[in-house]
Length: 216
Image (cartoon, rainbow, N blue to C red; front, side, top):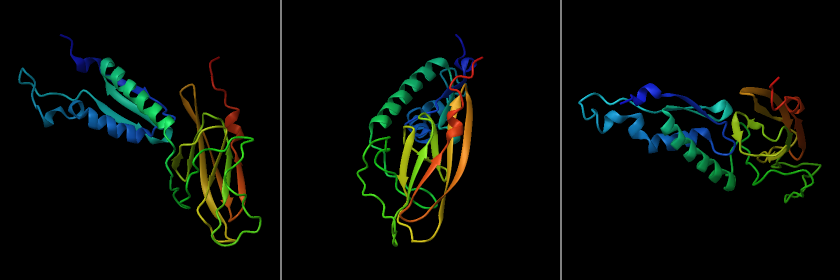
């Protein structure tokens, strides 16, 4: 009989577009805990040999990607489960998110070009406790991070608001956009200054020039 460990290899799952790779990995480790730590329940097989782990799951947060070390049969099963979680995450309303630094809340949905906002316009002359608004232009399939927090927004124009800010004081966000092309990650970082009651626009136009297929 073939040794299942001899067929183990590393499988790349992702980058995930809707679900968070770290949360998905936690679910997989819970479901397949017997494959990851077999010695906890049955330390030896039928022949008395120590049972070996048949699965390891790792996460690369930078690209929201999973890496699974296992055999092909287990990978097929895991990949199907991940696809189901991706679909569930896509169809679920985005959770409100606290951004590090300014602790801003994410909007309920990204604002698309030409779409009317359900928010009243920001006042030109801001008083205390007024939010700032940031609009980001980037490739539709790009991943966006605000102060290293992954933002689960999609489309080529994405908008979020800061928490209420004191008037006449500058605050800053660090924005990072990433695209994956032909297996390589291309990223760009911008620092944007925001003030109460004002709207700022950040354009990651350079990433839009990266071809989606680098085959020659």
